[in-house]
Length: 252
Length: 280
Image (tube, rainbow over the protein chains, first blue to last red):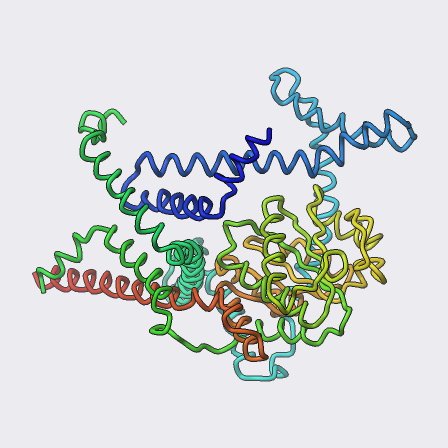
């Protein structure tokens, strides 16, 4: 066991190896931007495997053992009446396994009934409350707003919402006043989509910047591994990769 | 002109990827070329002011609802929030609603403790990792309002005087999803104050909560994190140890300039072709 621990300490847990692995996997995933290739597939599957494995171990350690096995063991050693609730909910949870059977799948519905009843009972009142908070905030004396910007904001919200709704009103042809309102509506929608798209692009670039920071900080590893990946891709696409022919494409 | 338009039309998208890649990575090698200044938004300022106004010993609850996939945007802002809390000698409770965020949070606090200024901080006294609970946020909030300490099954001096969640002075939820809304749903009932740190993608969804005052303040994406860093630096924090987000801002700006360029070129091709087709 000590030998295994020593090997793990000097390989996977070694900080230098960790940095090189981080750079290698970043570059492997980025290689997809050139073309789909085995290195990308390896990186993708390694990521999925590790995420699931890590998630399962943590779930076992933090959830199943302390909240199910340990209380069950205590109940077995010293049974108390309130332990019945634990047994009841464990059995209810186990009914989920009946989903694997076609004829007995209905048994799991009892569990789902509790889940949906709880969700509806909890969610509906608080969501309605939330709508009232948002709605009542809109209903404020307009000309008591502190700045011109605050006043103009409410006009944009009210007329913007109205004109955007008119764009989806198809019971009358979009001509005259209705047509012009619908035109304003589509402009409002486009501004909204543009703002969301801009924020999304900024977010995605920010994610990449995180990886770029790692590559830039470890430029030696980045340079060596980039050259190795480029050589691999060159050999793979030159000698091993077969482009799908016309017949193959037609078949799909 | 025709030849130039043809080159642009047939340009392989991989050249654009390469340019974006270079635009992101070059500023890290020559940061002095891209030094920039930007204003602080009032949402960021509000978060800073609220935490600054808390008194020594007050408790702050950090909801760490993100994993390593979102660390580029959210880690710098949570780092600055925690550091500001430590500077103000506030007690910090860190809760992880996702399993995969726990080690990230523990590593960050250990990293912060390596700085000379924070080396005396003790787990269970100045801060505590509350861990993960396999229950929904709604049930957790109800439980915290019943008995804060036993909800998490943790012990420590840090819990002194904190019976329920009502004794927590402020909470910040850091997430890349609609997660903070789960707290907002129960805010009316319990009346706690909260702010949020969100990614640029989800940020626009939270603007209505700022307008209603349900959120006191908000840190929005990498820029929000950089603003927060600048606020702390302007009050005396060391620039070298608090520039994680600022380091990325130059890359963000340069990559956006590359995108503007290509959007402009794309429009040029479109309008040129339309004009050319009309004239024929």
